[in-house]
Amino acid sequence: MGHSIALSILNRRTFLTTAAAAVSLSPFIARGDEVPSALPSERSAEFKEVFAKLVGNAAPVEGKITVDLPETADNGNFVPITIAVDSPMTETDYVSAIHLLSTANPHAHVATFHLSPLNAVARVQSRMRLAKTQDVIVLAVKSGGEMLISTTGVKVLIGGCGI
Image 1 (cartoon, rainbow, N blue to C red):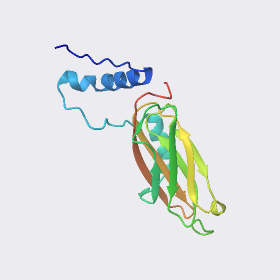
Image 2 (image 1 turned 30 degrees about the vertical axis):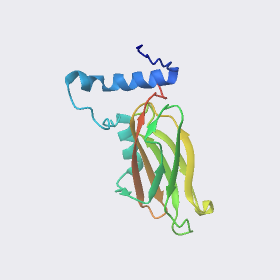
Image 3 (image 1 turned 90 degrees about the vertical axis):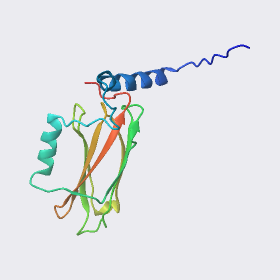
C-alpha cells in the first residue's frame, strides 16, 4: 500500500498573493488576536486635506451614487471602476462634477470628471491605481450645490502605487 503525495506548482501570482496575505495577517496571528474580517482603512493627511477642500461647508449626503468596484483587487495597478449617479441630467438638475478620491494613495485626488446636461447620463468608467487596501470615496456635485458621497472599501492584494 503506497502513499500518494500531491504536488502542486505555484505560479508567481499565486505565490505572491498568498505570501502578501500571510504577511498582512501575521501581526494578528502572532498576538493570538482574532483575524479581522476587513482591515481598517486609514485616512492619510493628504486625503483629509483634499476632502476638506472639496467638501468645504457642505454636508455630503449618502445615496444616489452607484459604484462598481471590485471588493478585492488582485493587483492595485489596474482597478476598474464605474460610477453612476441617479440624476435627471436636465438643464436645471444635473451632476456637474464627480470627484474620485483614495484614502491611502500617495496622491489622494485620483480624478475629477466634469459633466453637463449634454451628457444625458451621469456615468463614468475608468481605471485607477491603489497602493494598498483602502476606501475609495466618490463625491458628486449637483448643479444646485448639493453634494453626494459614496464610500467603497477595496482590499488590494498587490500594491500598485508604490510609495
